[in-house]
Image 1: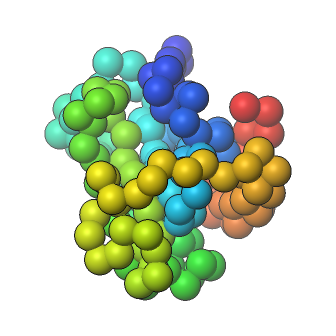
Image 2 (image 1 turned 135 degrees about the horizontal axis):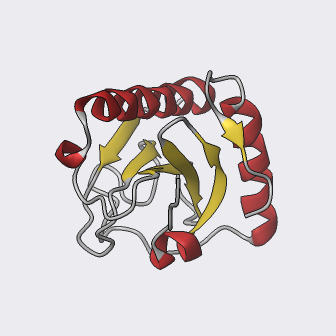
Image 3 (image 1 turned 90 degrees about the horizontal axis):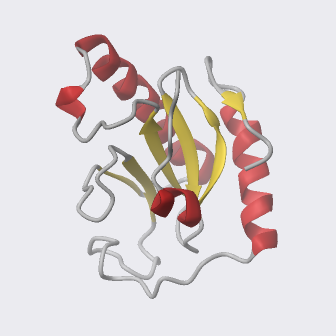
Length: 145
């Protein structure tokens, strides 16, 4: 299956791996962890454009990410969103939120300073998440971005 990641997602994230339906990305923004799922279907803009079976698969993958963020990072709240106003390619944000984060209790969008993790911190968090994700059935890591 041919799949092309939107250039903005490619530049703003590190690829962690794949679930059966979605590419798993780690945002470089120094907040969270912030994981993004992108169904590997070109020209896809909305969840309801997926066949029903793929909608269910996306929900399973999204729930697995939310559980990982809640359990492994003790997030107080998981924000999940599919905005797509700047990047039309369907993608679901999963953001671990904490009462001491820069945007709490408001939404992330428009309430952060855009600071990115250092390359070293991003690589370390990506590796940590790959290990944690490898415990989830169907996940396969991609080491070189």
